[in-house]
Picture 1 (cartoon, rainbow, N blue to C red):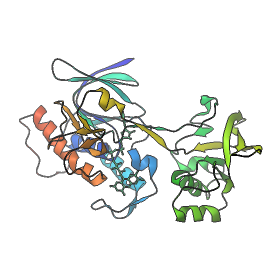
Picture 2: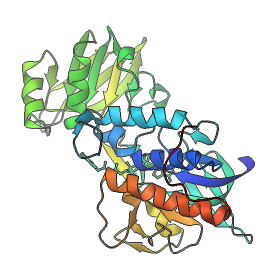
Picture 3: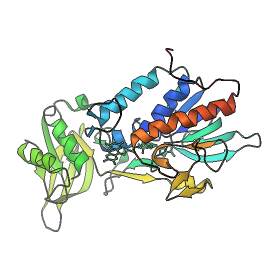
Length: 329
Ligand SMILES: Cc1cc2nc3c(=O)[nH]c(=O)nc-3n(C[C@H](O)[C@H](O)[C@H](O)COP(=O)(O)OP(=O)(O)OC[C@H]3O[C@@H](n4cnc5c(N)ncnc54)[C@H](O)[C@@H]3O)c2cc1C
């Protein structure tokens, strides 16, 4: 395993909206910061679960989509790229306090050394729920995908979307005008999406392949052959596509906080007014933390970030003044 010898002032664990803003704010306070996110994309629940949903309850962000909020946060992070390094597809899996009060973090890729830790892991590490059948995982990221990075990648392609919830329906509808052909495979005849989205799906040209389970996926040329078995029925058939896009939701796992011996309440980190946990040097914000009166909203997390970062800054650099407001960089 690779060992990163650099000693960071701060490691932000979790690149959801709250961790992204916290890392940006830490950069503005000139803290030497790294942000580690287990998924290949920043944005947490917003990007993974509801990128197309309109968000109405963030000050100064007027009825924008989830993906627009994340794009704005990425743009803000880019302004502090000299102070903040971003590590994607890397899960923090271990934590060890050193005698000098610093921490060694173990990730899925390396060990790394940090003076303080800000936990913004939401409900835990997200991993996409996989296809239930056995298949060659060498197809992942190519013919079989669990994420859509750029809609344009699907231009002119035949795409089969697997799933029956909002995300699957949203992707099928978003792909319809771009792809050559879109089908959606669901094990029930009824879809579990927003009524208006389901109505739109039914009126669209998206082919509804229901009620079928996927029982096999094999490479066929540049694409895939998908084996289907009727749910509670005898019909078996196969379908070919350039890409199978799987949307079975995400699994969140926050056993780490428990493993690290931190004080928890309802699986969230108990923090004080500085967002500090029961362990000095470890802070928690966003959905991952709790205190009396806690409200799990993006805007609450945005408020918690400066409270934590300014306290961390004062602890590490007592001579630095507290900022009154931002200035141009
Ligand atoms: C359908 C839906 C709609 C919502 N609508 C709204 C709304 O309109 N307004 C609103 O304010 N809130 C809304 N929320 C709630 C909002 O999304 C959350 O409050 C917000 O995402 C919390 O942000 P966060 O950054 O704390 O955590 P998250 O968004 O959960 O991000 C945590 C990140 O940490 C990463 N992570 C976890 N463990 C590790 C690890 N060990 N190592 C590295 N990375 C890790 C995860 O992969 C994830 O990316 C909604 C939630 C849902 C599900």
